Amino acid sequence: QSCDLRAMEGSEIDQGNAKYGGQEAIVVFEDVEVPPEFVFMDGEYEFAQLLVERFTAYHRRSYICKAGLGDVMLGAAATISDYNGTSKASHVKDKIIEIAYLNENIAGTALAASYGGKAMPAGNFLPDVLMANICKHNVTKFPYEIARLTQDLAGGLLVTLPADKEWENDIARPLLEKFLVGKKGVTVENRRRILRLIENMTMGRNAVGYLSESMHGAGSPQAQRVIIQRLMDVEKKKDLAKRLAGVTQK
Image (cartoon, rainbow, N blue to C red; front, side):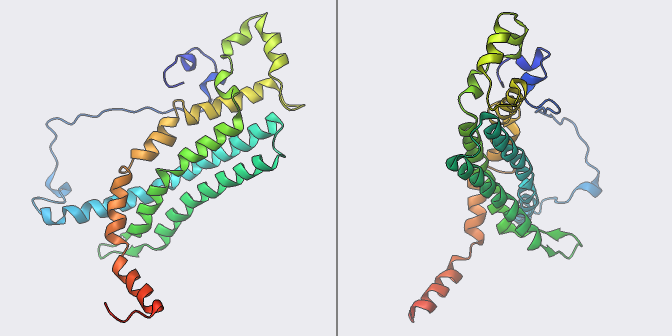
């Protein structure tokens, strides 16, 4: 989808997401005057690390938004399983449970970052920095597995489904309607719509926001690992282990 023109040919079905889209842009600032009251740091480089750490805590905690997209993926995975007539199979149920488990881990760590937040002297609240980074680090991994499981449940028709224009052909349409039937009572059109939504979110235009942006938005994975290493307080954890094991020497 991301490299073809189907979405521009007037077909609502082939758009995948029939309601919304998104764009990316490069913004160039040139000769911009910043009023002094909006300059928060002027040579105080000793605060640069702390500034980045705190700003990214807000940004990385906000990646709970990917759990919202994950809810859509869970719904799409369950719906296409229904339409394919496979929803009662035990391994299909297990994969849908796994999608829910992964997605709630994203939401849970974001909520934990908020719950663990603390009031700052300026009056704002700062989320728990460690949990915010763990949330974003989950986001660099879990949506990819959710997408893989959803594609697994969708089946190969996800990528072999003919474009909507083929349904305009008097010869092709009856054949497609006959051989692309899934579960009894489900229209071929509705099956196509869900498949196109999955295509859109896992390899099409909206995969930019669900997958690629999950990887690099708010910092690539190693950026979170740097913060996690700084804040995990491993020496305290070593002392806990030594105390339980009866170790007396440091």
